[in-house]
Amino acid sequence: MPLDPQMQEVLDAWSRSGLPEFSAMPLDELRALAAVPRLPEGPAARVDSLSVPGPGGPLQLRVYRPQSELPTGPLGGVVFFSGGGFVIGELTGHDALCRQLAVGAECAVVSVDYRLAPEHRFPCAVDDAYAATCWIHEHADSLGIDHRRLAVGGYTAGATLATTVARLAKERRNPALVFQLLLYPLADLRTFDTPSHLAHAKGALLTRESVMRFASLYVRAAADRADPRCSPLAAKNLIGLPPALIITAEYDPLCDEAEAYAAALRAAHVAVTLSRYAGVAHGFVNMYPWLARGREALAQCQRALQHALAGRA
Image (cartoon, rainbow, N blue to C red; front, side, top):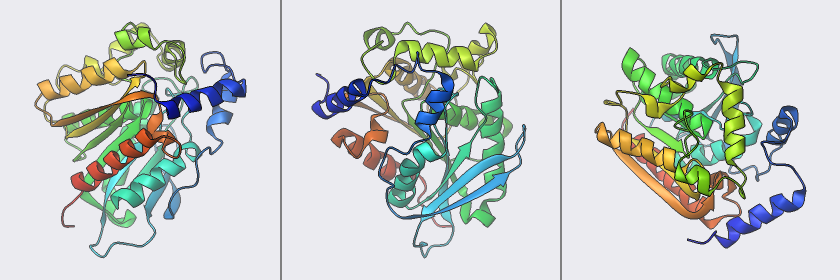
């Protein structure tokens, strides 16, 4: 369908800003841009920061909870990884989204500040994401989280990390996870020639050139791209992964690979809900203050998390 009028307004505003495309912006400027909060703070939530051991040094976490504790004991939890093509991710930039998920789904959201490329290339982010998830599972009681009701989630590169952690957890039998929340995942770094990559190469906030640039900064060698920890679609065995909600956008270069991954999960008998939102571009869920479809998708994520994490502590 045609580009949603509200989405067009967002893209027009970005165009008027005079900022270059992500593919042409210096990395330090990209990171500085990501660190600036652009959303209203969001609903009131209790937010705690902590530092935990990681494979490459301390990892910074933020734990979001509804401000009023629920009377049923420990909360279900989701370990959340931000997007940014493995090179930009920043805790402050997705603070509002984490608040929305914690309050709307009545759960704990633990945001992980994993190491970034090119300073720390693949598989550093994967190692951090898995280590953080294991630590959170092991220390769930002290965090007020029920370790039997733990999910993973993220957007773009963060969704790639989330589903990779889910697969590693299954293969290593630790930790037990109950759900995957995957917002427009980057599912295949081996090729950038899908119809959606070609049809939506330019004109939106995320371009084909940007995706290719981020991938080149993330991987060390061509062989890394075929590693299933890097490209989830390259995994040979997806059987036994937890149920997933996958959100895609019609005008997103990543749309086809994300939907191909949903199909691969279904072929492995994983319960998957795939929701493609028409007329919107990459990142639209994070634009919920201005986009009706962003609010719809956010509400779907909240409901899905609340349902997946329901149960007695």
